[in-house]
Length: 181
Image (cartoon, rainbow, N blue to C red; front, side):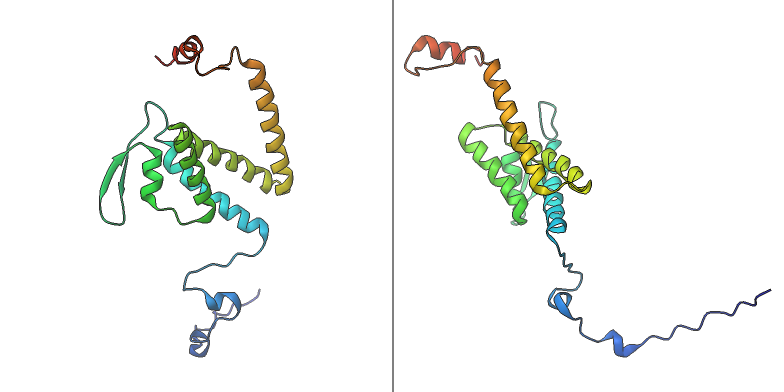
């Protein structure tokens, strides 16, 4: 039978403790991380957008929850309006900022559906992340989304019942706003 020896006592090496870190880690703050590779950066960008979508998703719809937001000045906001939420959160991540810009463009163009824009964008990125983790290249995922967009637009064109061709015609405008009124 083999005889086990106790492990050697721990002796810290103080010379190694105070040495400078080399390479890219030496340039970052303590706790900072450096990612290499396009795929890893892509996954980090997706993660930031997913987090933003997760914050706003619960305030979507008629039964959406309000959020309590405290901005940098200490002012409190209780709202379910996504435009207010993303404005007051002061998003710093570049990829998440693109999602915020899309929501603000939606607000300016249509005056509504900012939450749908952020939530839908986040969900598309969640599905893209699954494909990327399966080994599908990012350009192939993009081509798939472009094909899906083209197909969806074809279906929408086939579903329209009528169009408003003359905005000065009162009967066409009545037909357009009848459902809203």
